[in-house]
Amino acid sequence: MNLTAQTNRRNPLIRKLEAFTLLSDEDRAALERISADPRRVMPGMDLIREGDKPRGVFLILDGMAYRQKIRASGARQITAYMLPGDTGDLDAALLGEMDHTITTFSACEVVNIAPGTIAELIQAHPRIARALRRTTLVDEGTLREWLMNIGCRTALERVAHLFCELLVRMQAVGCTNGSSYLLPVKQADLAATVGLSSVHLNRTLQELRRRGLIKLERGRLTILNLPELQAAAEFRSTYLHVRFQAAA
Amino acid sequence: MNLTAQTNRRNPLIRKLEAFTLLSDEDRAALERISADPRRVMPGMDLIREGDKPRGVFLILDGMAYRQKIRASGARQITAYMLPGDTGDLDAALLGEMDHTITTFSACEVVNIAPGTIAELIQAHPRIARALRRTTLVDEGTLREWLMNIGCRTALERVAHLFCELLVRMQAVGCTNGSSYLLPVKQADLAATVGLSSVHLNRTLQELRRRGLIKLERGRLTILNLPELQAAAEFRSTYLHVRFQAAA
DNA sequence: CGAACTTTTGATATCACTCAAGGGACGTGG
DNA sequence: CCACGTCCCTTGAGTGATATCAAAAGTTCG
Image (cartoon, rainbow over all chains, first blue to last red; front, side, top):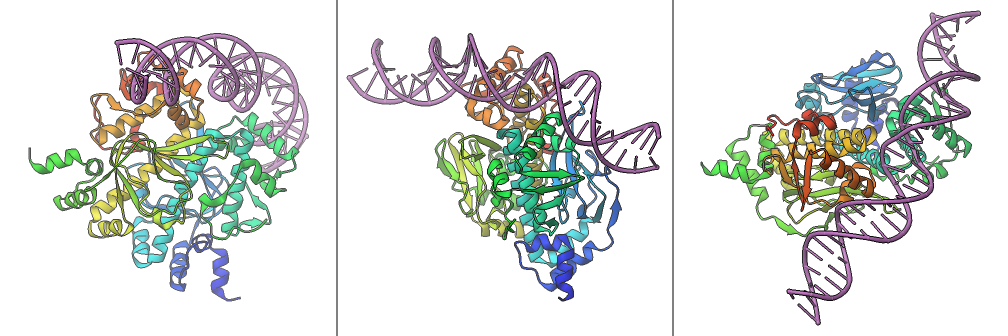
């Protein structure tokens, strides 16, 4: 096994982009260069806050983070999970201020990419540019799916759908172990993700466990019966546009 | 008043982009060229359906359309309103198939732009390219706000918020008359937008009317008390990133 | 071993849904 | 100009899913 293949396995951004685009060695090298020298961030830290001026783009190399919006009342809505290989909005610097906050779930390795660096990367590597534009579309599609989730699914369907989505996305970056992945997320966070109270979310998890569909303990989710979980959620992964959906 | 100014007033795409970017005469001319020769589409027609292969980009010049996702059960979620000046996803052609359907609310004037034309436009007009990338960010921000709307606001807040947002967006393209704008949308559609049943939506509208906040009749919404409607919705327009918010 | 946090449980309250029927408005054809 | 059908809005009554409140049990970690 050569170095490129190893690198490929390690760097989640490269894995993610290669899930639907062929990259050259040079493309991969450029992405490696960008990913060098990440910083470690503790759990529960804000990477950037609503109202801040964006100064570049985040790239998550390890760990899990999320986007959230917070109301005056303290109620909050989580609008996206950022997994390894995920980036913030590429053009965020075009806007004057952030309309949401990005916070770490777990300890993360994060790279802060300057706007100029992104611009150069895109200019010099058209394949990467295309792949990144494609990820933007997928992010948007994911937001639409989440809207659907909260807007017209039951509590059980919502949670099941979220778990199915995360499995596909974690598989795409090589962060699964069979049908199991790290999910360092409190029940209150899951509740804020799917628009439920944390009490009701707890009861919904119990129902999923009772049906033998999942196991969730110590920050690790294991899907015990993927076909039934997908059926319960009416889950279809097309909106994620991954080329090869790995088997359970 | 010179021709440019008139054109500017007429073409909603130009108006929209000029709400936050300075365009040259040449930029405007290019956008006019693209907007030439729209086709008329009847109400309730699908412009493109879930599963279809995207063949270009839609630009709405007149009327109102929407994006929706439909479940097997028939339940549906509207994920975006497309107003005059709004376009579909610029890079939609990068994806193999649509994950949602775009349908007209009212009779519309629509332009179908080929992928190549978009590419040329972006290449030749960097200011337009920047402005369009910015609209993508705003679209994403709007999706996040809608998620928040459905996820953690009450029925009344949701509807009030939607009406406030549409006012700002319609103002940005010159489609308002004071605090009033055309809203050719059935109550069942509003319900599918904010994640309520149509019965409950009806009762929510009545409450808004009872409080003297709005009037909604014959496809026209009039906001009678904008400050109170905004307060009821906890509405802040920052996520729309319009530079000049017109007064009530 | 204790403090702080998270998950779980129980009881009650409420917002929103469903079903079903009654009114309007609008258009079409006689 | 009226009669009728259709579509949409409105109303009422009963139900159900989810929220809220409060406390107990479990977990984690210094």
